[in-house]
Image (cartoon, rainbow, N blue to C red; front, side):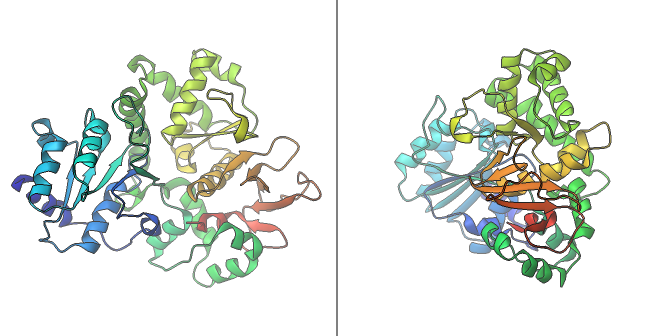
Length: 401
């Protein structure tokens, strides 16, 4: 344990505390067992360490942070560590990268059942299952999906500002007053275009020059390592999955032609639909349907987008379609804030949000032509900074979290 405590002290010695994400306050850190899920690079580890730094003194041995992907766990088990930690008075155990520990769910279940007073916080891949074959943790564990940075968070980190978030209902009710408040502090459009290419993953603070490489490394890691280990993707098919993402990155926003995509990358339709489901769970793409309540497990999606516009800019071999970037931004920000987004169809607005809000996404000249009379409809328009009637700047939807 002395080695783990020494590593804990080393981990805590250089935790960046300049900005604490608001999403951290939504987590019930006192639950007996929680897991922070999300793609590599969105800041799960930092969030865990910041919480410890905020709430425990440097020499407090009631808390322990460790990573399951270190060599220590090649000769020691999770149960062994937890048993010893509790014996020494430990109460809060943080384990990072839990998905890299074989058979983790069974051991965590046994730790949970054996130590009623122990609080356990885990972090892991977006693909982690709580009800896998080893142990069903779904009734014991509280999962939190950690998204990348919102536009609001990106501007805060760039400018060192305090900017408020806003609930969707409040934004739709009073868009002009909110936009006016934000513009007193900054010019959001100045940062919006930058955010589309470099703002979702915190890597841009390390180096803007290497940001595209780091994002592509995230994709490679998920496809080459996480999908084979967590979803059984055959290693020989990883190239086809990457080809699928390249195809999606260059698609314009129209309905999906699965036959054409299957032919272009050389896989069967059923396999294509499974890969799409896996990629969505990995937070690399978004599948959109006209009615989420009636979809089957491997149903053809009505629209596909990459998960966020940074992925489009990095993976596309041509200049990305601005319409695709706008839609990817809108869907990502709404879903990351916890809203349900469905495809609107060809005769309605682009998207249906939370079942009854119709939103058309476009440029500054986008009108209400596709929104039917009587609909609760809005336009999210790029290249404007003031709201007029139900036409709201697209950037404002980046302030929901």
